[in-house]
Image (tube, rainbow, N blue to C red; front, top):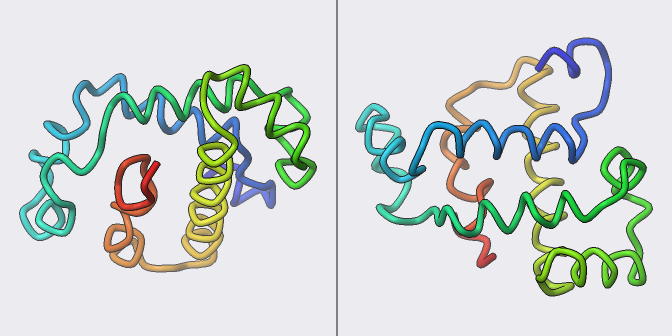
Length: 134
């Protein structure tokens, strides 16, 4: 949020740090169980897979610093290299980039005074395994 307030773009490095922060809390599904009921019931039980979060981190780690800062430069050959380096498929790389764009759009809305309730409502779509099929 601080980067957005300063007019800087939310990049894939920030996205990765969010996932690292989530994994440090332990099993994501157990953390979600502790959320208020009106929030947690919007996210299906077992919807988020910790292995998929780790795979997402591996994909981002397989990118160069420039690719993390400017994901728009990722074309087919770079995506193939990233998939090979992370032990995933190009489709999974594409899914990650789609999720990132969705999160980036949400962050921009939130940075412009959007309501947190709208972000929470879409929370399950923003994490690997939370409805995006990754």
